[in-house]
Every structure is written in C-alpha cells, then in structure tokens.
Amino acid sequence: MERTFLMVKPDGVQRNIIGEIVSRFERKGFQLVGAKLMQIPTNLAEQHYGEHKEKPFFGELVDFITSGPVFAMVWEGENVIATARQMMGSTNPKDAQPGTIRGDFGLTVGKNVIHGSDSPESAEREINLFFKEEELVNYSKLMNEWIY
Ligand code: DAT
Ligand code: MG
Image: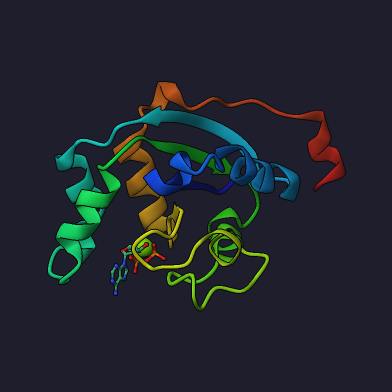
C-alpha cells in the first residue's frame, strides 16, 4: 500500500486546524500510520527542502518551517501521494481551488498550511527523514472492507 508524508505547517498549527486537516484525510478513506507534533531543527529543514536551496525564497522557507511546531504525519492508502496533493491544492493558495486545503485556508504562498510529498521518491525520502521505522504502525481496519 502506498504511503506519503504530510505535514501541517506552523501556520496551520497556530490556527488550530490540525484536526480539520486530519479529518479530511480520514474521511477520504486514508489511514494514519504515524504522527507527531515536533519542532523542526534547522538542519532537518534544510535537508527536507534541499531541492529548493538555490531558490531566492529558501532562507524564508527554512525560517518559516522552523518558526513553531509542525504536525508531521505518514498516511497510507491507494494512490495516496497524488490524491493528497489534489486535496492540498496548488502551491499558491491564490490559485488553489475552493474545497482544497490551501484553497479553503490559505491566502499567500509563504503560509500555505500544509506540505505533502510530490512523488514516490520524495515520499520515501521524507518519511525516512522524519520518522524511524518503529514510529510507524502497521494495522488493519475493518472499515477498509467498505473502502476497497
Ligand atoms: P509544494 O509545497 O506545493 O510542494 P514547492 O515544493 O514548489 O511547493 O515549494 C515548497 C514551499 O516553498 C511551498 O509550499 C511554499 C514555498 N514557495 C514555493 N514557491 C515560492 C515562491 N515563489 N515564493 C515564496 N515561497 C515559495
Ligand atoms: Mg514540494
């Protein structure tokens, strides 16, 4: 079963929408297999956003993601990587459709509420960056018979 890394960013935590965001993925049918509230150290932030290190906004991005606690999660389900990206909406909330997380809760690209892996390779890399194997839980839910 496919897994992805999702993270409520510091703005989402401060705005009390962790529950709202978790609820959307639960209701969709995905299964939570790991989660923690954490303060990201600078070196982890720089690694996580390594692909953007040449971008003009890199410093701002690292400052923002380390500015307060985040809620890091691993979710599992069929096609979860691409579907979670669709549920998040476009990177810039001004372009994100209503009904998506960024479309419903964000206004500016700097504070866009949620992070989600964009490919199987980034999902694997990011899950391993944020979670140890023993922090992820393998379990089955009876409800899955009504989803799959
Ligand atoms: P996404 O988070 O949708 O995967 P990304 O990987 O291109 O988007 O960029 C990572 C984060 O960097 C994004 O969530 C917000 C920030 N960002 C992206 N483009 C930006 C820009 N032009 N100015 C400021 N911040 C930007
Ligand atoms: Mg990205």
